[in-house]
Amino acid sequence: MKTVEEALQEILDSVPPLEIEQVTLLDSLNRVLARDINSSRFIPPRDNSAMDGYALRSEDIMSASRQRPVTLRCVEEIPAGGYSARVLASGEAARIMTGAPIPEGADTVVKIEDVTVDAEGVTFYAPSEKGVNIRRRGEDVVDGETILTKGTPIGPAQLGMLAATGNALVPLYRRPVVAIIATGNELIEVDGDPSPGKIVSSNSYTLYGQVVEAGAVPLPLGIARDTREDLLAHFTLAKERADVIVSSGGVSMGDYDYVRDVLRELGAEVRFESVAQRPGKPFTFALLNGLPLFGVPGNPVSAMVSFEQYIRPAIRKMTGHRALFRRTVKATLEEPLTKKGGFTYFLRGLLTGRDGRFTVTTTGDQGSGILKSMARANCIIVLPRHMTTIESGSEAAVQVIDNSLLAATEPGYLEGFSA
Image 1 (spheres, one colour):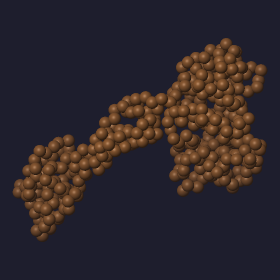
Image 2 (cartoon, helix red, strand yellow):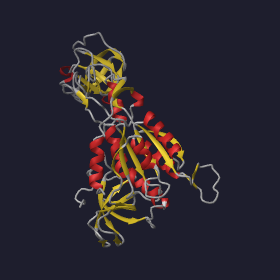
Image 3 (cartoon, helix red, strand yellow):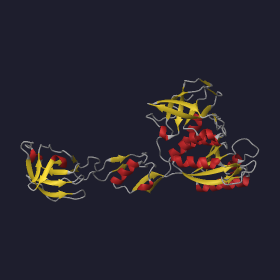
Image 4 (tube, one colour):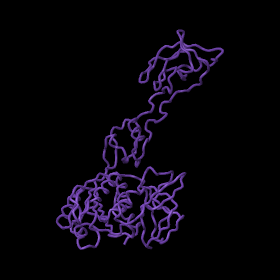
C-alpha cells in the first residue's frame, strides 16, 4: 500500500505535459503558455501625451509666472489616433489629447487645467520641465522583449498584453479530455426512478465539476453496469477518445467489483491499488495504452478527495501549470481530533481567518458517504499518518479549496507536515 506522498510522486512522474496547440486569443483564458512570447513592437510605438493639454517647447515658457505669463500661438490640434507632420517651432503650441503622439519639436505637455485660452493664443503661468506628461516610446514594452514566459497562466492582464503585442494566436498546452465512467448496478441517472436499492450517480456530476475546475475537458460516458461486457465497452470507448480516464466505484474487493479484471484484460499496467489514506484507501492508478487511468472509490467523498489529492495535480501538470497544488495554510484547530496511525486523513473543514491567522473546524460527520460534509467545506484538513491525537488549539495543514479565502500565503503541498 502506497503512502500519500509515494502515490502522488508516482502519478506525477507518469504524466508529462501534453502537446502544444495554437489557440485564438479569446480561447486562451485560464490556460498555460507553452512558449515564451516576445514582442515584435514598441509599446507605446511613439512618445505620446499622458494628459489632455498643450505640447510645446519647454524653453519657450521657462520664464513664465503668474506675474509674467507667457502666451504661445496654438497652431494645430492632435486628437488621439491622429498624427502631426508638423515640426513645432519656437513660440508655437499644439492642442493635444491623451494618447496622441507628441509632435516633433515639442518636449513637454502642460495640462489643460493649467492654461487659459483666448483669441490671442494659449497662456502659461509656470515653467514646465522637459518630459513632463509624456509617455516615452517603449515605456511599457520594447521590441524583442520577452513579455510572457513559458508556463504563465493566461488571465485578463495576460490577454491584454498578448493583444497589445499583436498575438492573435497563442501557443498553449492542450487541455486533456477526461473520460468519466461511473460503475455500479445500483446507479441511476439524475432523472431516473429512485426505486429501492437505487441511488443517483452523483459522482458523475462532482467529477465533471472537478475536471472542469482543474482545467480539462470532461467526457461523461455515463454508467457502466457491473458486467464484464458493459465495463469493457465503456473503458474501450474511453481509451479511444480520452487522454485521461477516471472511473468511480468497482475498485474494492466485493463480489461484483470487476473493474480490475477488465483493466487487466485491456492490458492496463496497474501501478497501485490502495493508498494509506482516509477516506479513499481503495484507489487505483494504472496506465492504459500510456493513458493515465484513475479508479476512485464509489463513496462520494472518497471520490472527491482522491480527485483533489491526485487527479487534479496530474491534470494541472498535463496542462503546463507550475503550481500543481492547492494553497495550504496553517490553521488552529477549534476541536480535538483523533485518527488511526499509519494513515493520512483528509477531513472536510470550515476555515475562517483574518490578517493571515486562521482557525478551522470540521463540517460535522466525516463519513465517506456524507457528501454534505464536502458541500459545506471550504477546505481540507490534512492530518499526517504519524499522528493519532490532535489537541484543540494545535496547528494543522489546511488545503484551501474555496478561492475566495485565499490569503497572502505561499503555495506548497503539506509543507512541514508530511511524515
